[in-house]
Amino acid sequence: MRRKWVGGNWKMHGSRALASSLAGAVVDADIADVDIVLFPPFPYLREACAACAGSRVAVGGQDLSEHESGAFTGEVSAAMLRDVGCGAVLAGHSERRRYHHEADAQVAAKVACAMDHALLPVLCVGESLEEREAGRTAEVVSRQLGAVVERCGIAAFERIVVAYEPVWAIGTGRTASPGQAQEVHALLRSQLARDDARIAGSTRIVYGGSVKPGNAADLFAQTDIDGGLIGGAALQATDFLAICAAAR
Ligand code: PEP
Image 1: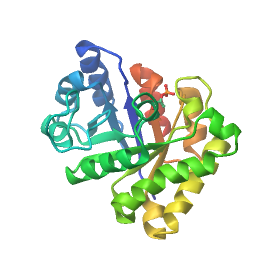
Image 2 (image 1 turned 120 degrees about the vertical axis):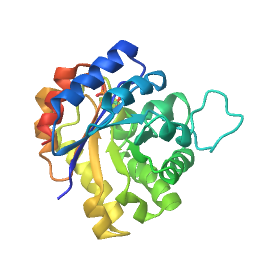
Image 3 (image 1 turned 90 degrees about the horizontal axis):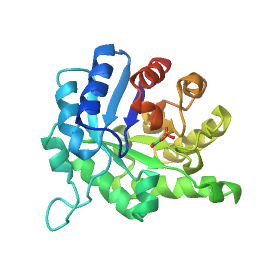
């Protein structure tokens, strides 16, 4: 039985005050039986970590450098994320792949770096609308997942959360149907199972893309959907908490 996981990606939104109040509201709700991680913008990690200290809610970075340290202006290392209290980090979010041209090998290096520093990597994969319409969904997500298997090894997937986030569903209000999402989740799991069936059975694969309180339960009820990575709805405590409750 895989434990459900829900992440709240605040993207480039909020303020110190919002970070404290939003994280505080999630902590106060004290939702059991679901692993919850909040991903605030870097400058607000401190507020979120302070609000979540001693609770069952964890905090993560939205990205990390694949380098340990050095002359990489603007970058944030895995060690720095650990140092401020993070327990997790997103790697390969489609907005990083698209606007910052992050390639599969770079994303895999970021996952490896996160693991070296005991951060839970949340590996994001997903196809664009163009790729889906061209019938290339399986090829694209398999390639993205395969790059991390190749770099980190299958055993690493005991400590990686995979987030399937079709690019056409992120922030668009257009959610993949539960059936469409389940199909890709099953495919990702069977790809892992080719290397190790036991690990594939325990890897959490969560869905992201316009998840709302109204569609969360149907998505999370699918056999291979182990929770969600939430963007827009994570900025409203009531919506986010309703989604977390749907994952229980
Ligand atoms: C995301 O940013 O990862 C995301 C899934 O966003 P949204 O829920 O707004 O589609």
